[in-house]
Length: 135
Image (cartoon, rainbow, N blue to C red):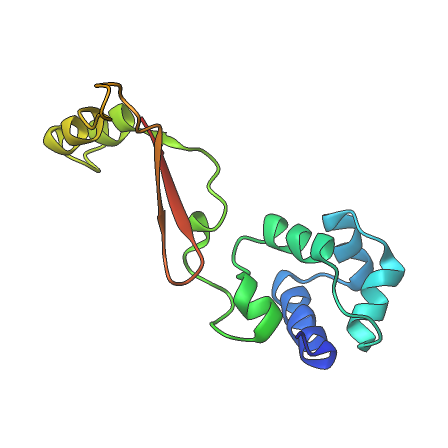
C-alpha cells in the first residue's frame, strides 16, 4: 500500500528535479491542480491514471521508486520502461545488436505443422523494464 506522506515527498522531489510548481506539473501531465495539491498534502492517495501520466511524461521516474521509494531517482535508463518503437529482427541485424545466425534461429522456429509461429519476443527484466522484438 502506498504511504501518502512518503509519496508526497517523492512527488515533490520530481517537481524539484524538473523545476515545476504544482500548477506547472498539472499542466505538464494534463491533470487537475486540486488533485495534485491533495496528493502533496497527503490527503489523497495517487490514482492509477495519475501514476501512469507521471511515468509517461517523465521517463527518469520508475514505478517502484514512485510508489514504494525502492530504487533511485533520477533513473539513468529510461528507455526500457516504455519503448517508443518495437525493433524488427532485420533492424537488429543491421545495427549489429544480434547476429545473422541468431536472426536465422528466430525465423526458423516452426510449430508441428511447419508453420512459423514466432511473432515477437519480449524480455522482462527484474527492475520492471522490458524489451520487445518483432519478427
